[in-house]
Length: 300
Image 1 (spheres, rainbow, N blue to C red):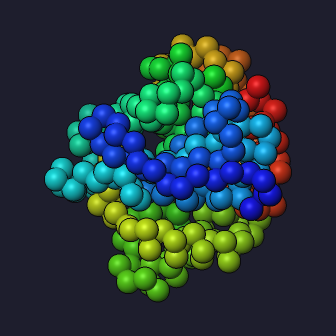
Image 2: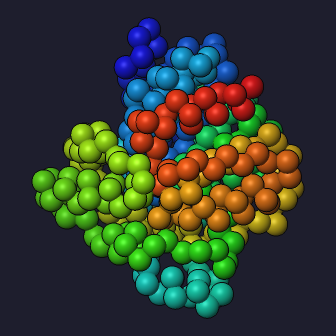
């Protein structure tokens, strides 16, 4: 890890009646930066060295487990949505119901800021985390200093879907045994990374091992995906966002094609679009300097 960057122990905050687990990097006196992770991914998917390098740019970096993942509160009493029925209804333009929405998940993020006595933060979201960050900017603009949306989308109908290979992995339940889960996760990481820039397999394996050992929530994954589908398009609402906004996307993203990032940037007035050649639905080590540099340059 980057030297001399403090890293707190994990802690739990009571937020909206839930327990949200988080940790921090850097000094609390620095400008806060909230990192929001994506679908089914625990906060440790924001790698410690990545967070420390961000903190070294002069930020107090906070990462956390969204509801229904990692060590935060699970919604098992809500049951498991019929995902296939929801996807079919969505494709037919019908409204769908979910145990909670992206609005609720954005409320959790704002509640964590409250618990940490943070008036506003630079908010950086990846994938579904980018969607949550967008909702924060829409409904809680006073709590967002700058918005960075990475490999995310607006949810608008008609945007290109994931590749067949990415869709197949997404629809395949992960094995429940440790070794099977790890191997499945590493294979999925290769798919998400895209065909251009190789992933760091050792890093992917380490993250899969730690995710399994912290505790999996496959039903939570389904409920989070249901929240994405039920929340619909943000295009019109994003037109009202009046915040410095940076959109980062790879042109080789197999899960959220680059058109999703382009649509995000086109929807937010004045947004800056940064398309990274060869980047898939991942942030490999070789791209960290470029991504961290862009975030730090924009979050001033």
